[in-house]
Image (cartoon, rainbow, N blue to C red; front, side):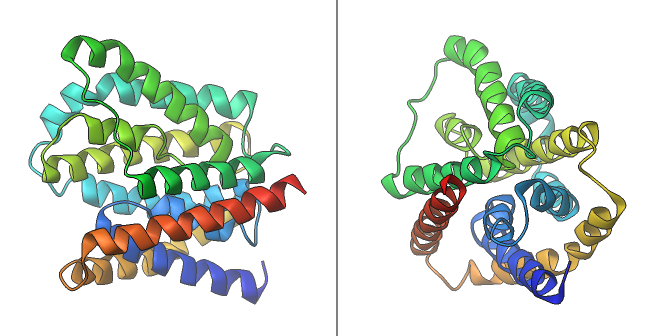
Length: 246
């Protein structure tokens, strides 16, 4: 990779970490979107693994309710793993439509965020059978695009979790998705040593950005920042989708 790609990568993970530190999510989404401008989705996903895993484990362990969240969310998480591994074999990030799929996923997530769409709160009986399906769908989207926010994030938001529990649940979901994506890349032999080194190097700017973002959270209105983030994500996704279809 040339110096331009490395510079874009460092700036991308700094920005992605800042977004995650501010609103509790967005590192993989921002990283996949911006890296997708200069490298293939498969390469972007491979570089994403280490910083995504470390920052999400950090977020997952930051709250006190990991065990009850695991007990409630394991059916969805199992679906995420199954969907990602099956999707990696059937579709994968090396396919010809991967770039367009990434753009579509980013734009869809941005539009959902801007429209403030919320799924209805499921009853316990509905949650029991819907959770594995949500996980399976999230895994398939992850395998095809490297983005693991849909439909997992709207689903978690619909469960009525307290704010701190939701942030911890997002960290848990993203951690499982990152591990499953890494396994899928290994299965398809898309994770080579050079990309592993770049992924490790990306941890420093991501961690720095996350620390800065946690400070920014106290200075900036979170709703305003979130709206700006979703608008930018929608435009970036639309650009990647258009470029992928041409």
